[in-house]
Length: 129
Image 1 (cartoon, one colour):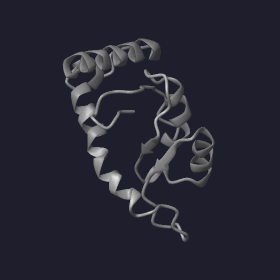
Image 2 (cartoon, rainbow, N blue to C red):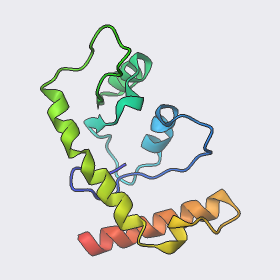
Image 3 (cartoon, rainbow, N blue to C red):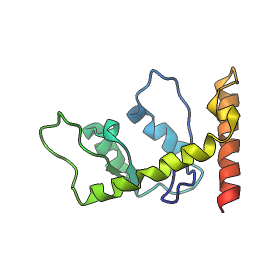
């Protein structure tokens, strides 16, 4: 998870079998900052009524384009203009993938890999701040 400038706010890892939308709350709990973000911008995979309702209880607004099979549109098109800023997250991935250890996972244990991911986030923060 990244802020509007592409700097890391939270990071988490999980197995490849889990869907991204189910990992939102785990990532929010693992954030580096104290307060919750006001908005989360995600791709079409995050378009879920259940996820929207659970995040609304926390006071977080989910901005994601509607999936093609949805009959009733739930997103306001004015808010979807923020979706264009999603490239900041892709830029964070590019910064993190400069570390070869993160591109190819050499670690056997997930906790070791998570530690290297956090170390990469610290390096990105120190370079950009």
